[in-house]
Length: 167
Image (cartoon, rainbow, N blue to C red; front, top):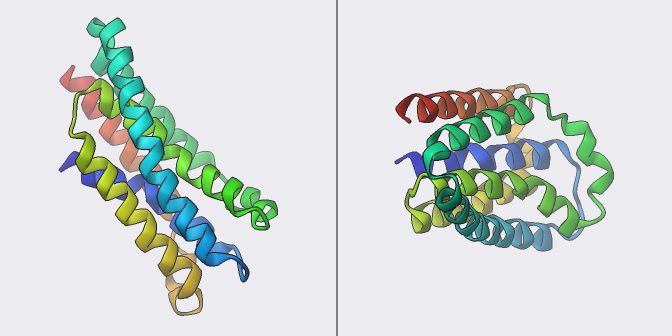
């Protein structure tokens, strides 16, 4: 269950960013790249996390919880305006909004959580959120006023604290 919640939380920032951007060209390419990267990055991250847990066995839960807290702080400090200049380059923009999935999957690899569940949920949520934000942007004006990235950052910090506490 933690895997599905983390996948939703890490992909919510791409929903907010894509909702704020006025992307009119190459939306399908952007959706496909975002979905692919939200599957590929966690796949790579799990192996990095498993490798690091082998070397840092004693500190695994503490490190993974700390990393989740840092990702949450990053989401709190992230500004959506920083992504405005990248809307002409779909691959670069997709990389920027998908990088959180790599970081979270490293921590999940360290904690030995279910790889396939997180990767599937991350890909599915990124596809759904990208389509919703890019194609139904005019109908979703309610979400523009919510601090969704900040809420997601706080939730990741809480998950990180719980992970450190369990360790």
